[in-house]
Image 1 (cartoon, rainbow, N blue to C red):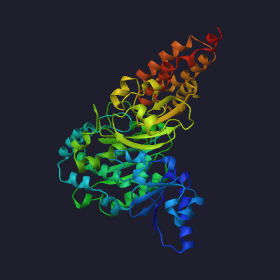
Image 2 (spheres, rainbow, N blue to C red):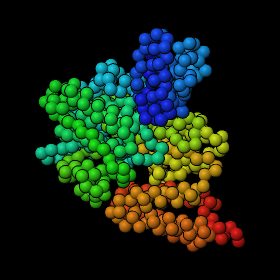
Image 3 (cartoon, rainbow, N blue to C red):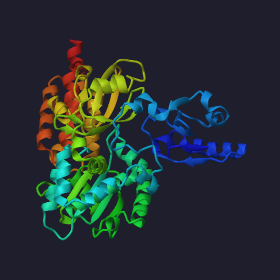
Image 4 (cartoon, one colour):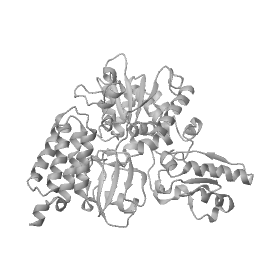
Length: 508
């Protein structure tokens, strides 16, 4: 018998290791030879641990599994109380458009042969047959934009680095995924690490870089371990190293561990940390594309941006750009969390509405109460009320509604949520995580907490002061930490003004 049991951190947190051990023990007790593959997760977190069993009709899913459920897998799997049928027919999974996450959950993450069998390295081989400028033209044509939050065109950034003249260039992967409700970077690194390595190698070919770094947040020990092993395997196999796939191109990758600072998700803070300095924001210009790591031209891209590149090179930029809406092309891995029935990762083309995501895909709230607000884009994202549910999921549509897509994390709240408390949390989060480089962020967030406390205590005059303070932070902060903190505050105030009515006024 052949079993797949995820070794993804979320699955392990739900007891996957114990379930895998129980399968091995039960098989030994029955004298049945088994193979247990520790795959990545399919992204259906509410079903973890999701165990898959090989059958003539394909892989059958069972979940969420416990140790007590294991014996029945051997006795009568067809009648198992947690049988889900063919895994890829589960509605949440079946309706996805999986490009970046096509292999995640299907293969052994550290098997290079399985990676190749699933289409891996086809993009790198296609890139090796092209000139650097042709690779970049393909990325520009695809419409790929930064998936880390800013949405900057990836090809434009690469072209800037490619045209820069310098003795050494770098590719830096930003894997400092710190947003609440976000886990796609971790899931990709733990479930399909060679995809990220391949994407970085293609970026190196396009720009002339010879050294790469993957900067992973310290809170991701499993991802760090998997990526280190994957880099070692890829180097030993000649995928990267002194000669990329046996050619004359050299590209080495090193894994670096972050130090727990949220602000290091901002590219210049990350670069300072990578250089061994304090993680504080740099003033721009100069841009990192011209003076980045060690003052050399540097591509800084998010995990999902780089992981999308192999598919684009293998299947063609036109196939990628054919998906999406407006200037938001390709797929977006939605990370659905909070008060929902079906939390997990859902990869789909841009253009799906917010209401479809929350009501249809996520199944509404787990509490059964009405949805009140959805925060999109992490702790600095705007809160969207139900009246925004017709909003198409794309960069421009959200910007028009004074929101942001960010890293595409969604946190759903029901009607019991205290919007003033959530707004205060945003200011408090900024105050704690600020690097201290600029006054609007360092001092503004502290004043924001004080102002919200005044409103809660009944000071109506503080409402105008709060709005002025938010505008100052948006226009005066050096980076997105201070600049985006007003988004959750102002959106909560705009859509739920009754919750900010001062106690004194209410009493009157």
